[in-house]
Image (cartoon, rainbow, N blue to C red; front, side):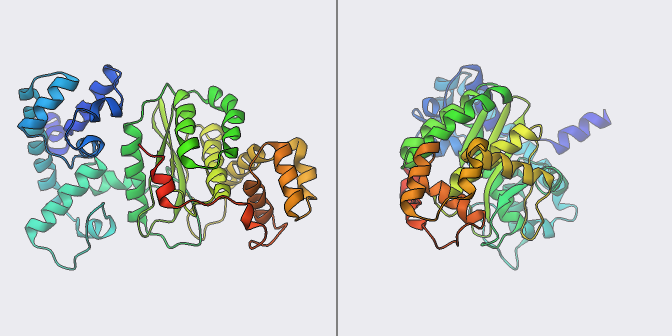
Length: 365
């Protein structure tokens, strides 16, 4: 009895969990469901994150799209709110102020002083957003360096809270992406076909195809712009035994950086049993990072052409010819030449494709 009471006090489940479960059971995509909701995809995202409350009108919509009765959905919302309040009460009875300062969420603003009511609201928002029952659960899920590594750039400052917020936004996006069952062997076979997409210049043309390819082998491709303070370029994580996630931030918004990061994250999924790894500022690349880098390098330049690449002259025409012969975009070859120290970082950059955020947003659902 005590154990059951403890579980009741420390656990909550968002109505969005039921939404996702029914979507999977009925084989409904995010597009299918959001088309029937006022507010479209943003309303669906809010249900999954816990930021949208189910009222009578929304309950009617959910019942018509997903099943159940309007009463079921209203009871689901009420039960969630009651359970969440119990968990909030447990958290605010302990030490939590440092956690609030450490962990931002989208739309939150740092405040030097908060009333008790404002502190309670801040705790409630973070618990719902991260889907955890307190600071300890958050740390186990998001702050454990043994569990999660990010591909990052030393060109940008970073904060742990901003990076974990970015990761959580990626998880929420991934939860709305339909995929097949995680199949590492099929993913490895698919890599040459993914590689051909590097020749396509615009994200609006290659991202939907890339997402479909990866989805077919159980990988949800999420694209989330990094918030202020987050310098992550990409992340890879197993969301469940049957679903993996690759998260991309489009840091630098150039083709060489995007594709190398993508192949690097796929390398982590394939080489390291689906574990995810942190690559923080100032840290030395460990064996796992070196292996993922080598995997990405070999995806870009086949081993059979490595010797030829290493003596490639830094001439625009020469690089273009080589890129055509290996079937990879010229800008990505330039990025590898720069990374290998063959040329300075200010040489041949006109061969790289660069995008603005309007280009990227056009490719997103």
